[in-house]
Image (cartoon, rainbow, N blue to C red; front, side):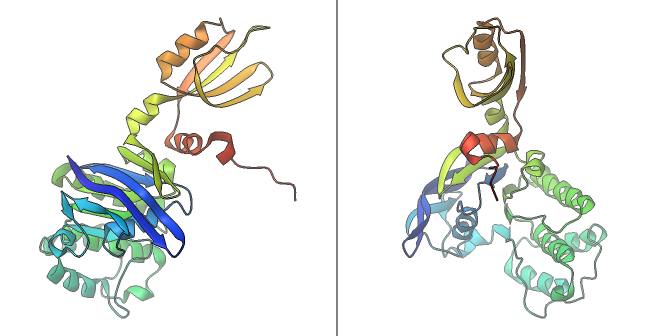
Length: 299
């Protein structure tokens, strides 16, 4: 069952189309990573999902109910944007009282217990806190809301490594015990790879690829082969990237490890090794391979 659905969502700002018939499906009780380059439309998608923006076309559903201007649905999710919201002079304790009135599932006892995990003065005005402490404040409040859906936009920027691990541990505990669904947008793909189980890649407001992380990793393989003199690569390989250094050919192949090894073995390579790709590598090659790689510029 899908918890969140984007059905052909289009959003325009003047003549610019930020989202273009975007289709996404976030399964229930999943940790879903929304990834893409700068300007891909990730934040616009999140703002449409939370009801801050109204799509020009299409619809966004949470458990088959429309989100926009639907208060009962909005009570079921909590969003931490890249700049968390708080009233100008409010402390975390003040925001706790506010959210306790807004969210029916707010758990005051959990808020108190989370004081052990987040070490800052919750009576101090949030605007006087460091960036990292403001993020801790946002997570303490979010986890106390006990949302069915937690939406995160660059959530752990500003947190030190120990606090990042603490935050993810608490979130994944909720996923396991309370069946929370998490949608997270981040550029830190190495960190996401450790926590997400589904991914959606978007660019220019469209979904390029979506699915389980294990499925995507099983479908792409990096192969390094050394060919005998006069030998050429076999036909039938779906090659996304190919580079050569001396006799060594480095290939990014779609189709899985077994298929790649069987095809390459047909030309009797002198050496062959295959390894799965990381999420970061999948992102780079799915986004256009060498055309999206780091470019050398003459300055």
